[in-house]
Length: 252
Ligand code: SAH
Image 1 (tube, rainbow, N blue to C red):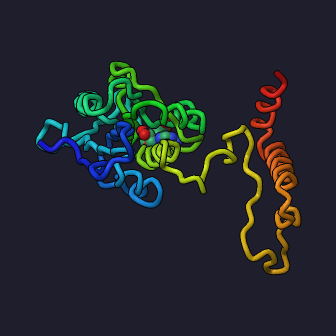
Image 2: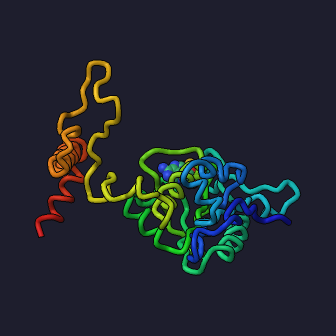
Image 3: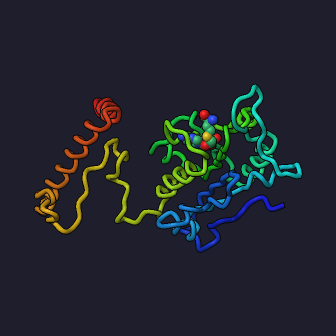
């Protein structure tokens, strides 16, 4: 029985540190690495900074139709992922993941994923992500395995895989060595509780629009002050929730 696809991380290692290890449970293993195989995050995968195992839940089905889902007790539309099959897949996933890696079910009912959670996950040795499909997963296996839930936002996806892509992307770019100095994290949106200031590149004048004069002044302190003022203005206008949180934090 093939239980897992080793998708990456076998290349040269990104230093002496153990790689960050992601284990994903899905009925669509071909969706991985998918977008995670490209660009910065894909390079980090090829370099062994992180590893990705996509475990096919269907490999743990035990009937001859390889069924992973069944009708919901109590009626209603759709199908539910079976507890016994998911449990067997989770046992293998947990054994493959580093000890103490959080086990998370992507679900619209979970707390919302954000930069703070991305930082916490990136600081863990890795993560196990369970991707739901259909109407979701039988509650008993979530209870038994004490699986925490994690949502991407207040909308419903057709499956957990695109959410897993987003979570893994956000975590991996925080791992040491993934972003070069040129892409440093310091002034990014959310890193200091503010949304980012507007960015401009050449040409300085385009389509009758000039970049703000301060940015071409060469006066670093003024550039810094302008960017900070812009970041504050944008945050206050667009995200009063973030702004209020920041105001409360900076008051003491
Ligand atoms: N019946 C469920 C939705 C099922 S959608 C409900 O109403 O809550 C199918 C799968 O997509 C879910 O099991 C989950 O893994 C994933 N999914 C859907 N929306 C999501 C979201 N906002 N964040 C994370 N995962 C999501």
